[in-house]
Image 1: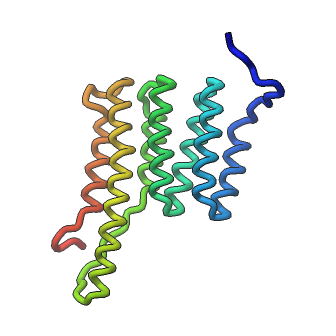
Image 2: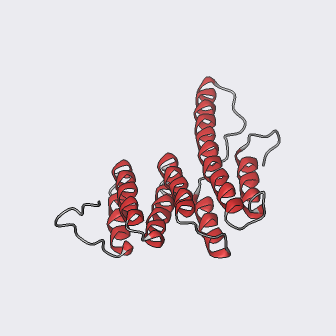
Image 3: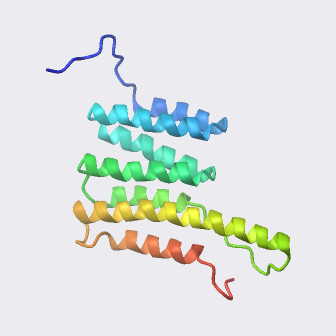
Length: 180
């Protein structure tokens, strides 16, 4: 026996919410926007409007990452992949392009080189901590995407393209001697 809430307003097209949420991000309210992305996309998902839920999550992940909000952006990116699974979206080039777009918005910041002073060590420790967060967040997203791709139509071990993204990101974010 299902009960419908009285006065429930139908959901607008996703683009309306995407524009509103972009304004919240542009105001610098990243955490508030994060919570709104999650709750609004969940409403579209429960209404079986999977494509629009994916549009909202994709937009949010990319915007948060472009604004340097790695934790918020990666959380939305992982929820994007979880939504692909819930909606049973098949692996194809269009979805791979969306995953690639999220991946390309993850910040890639080289670690400082030639450090020697105490201030420099503090700077290096901060940079290493930020790099560790970026790598862990990007890995969580790409590992979820690999698992989804293996389950929904890519190679049985997951999409080789997504594996390559993961390897590339790990390499780009790793401190190396003689790194240019």
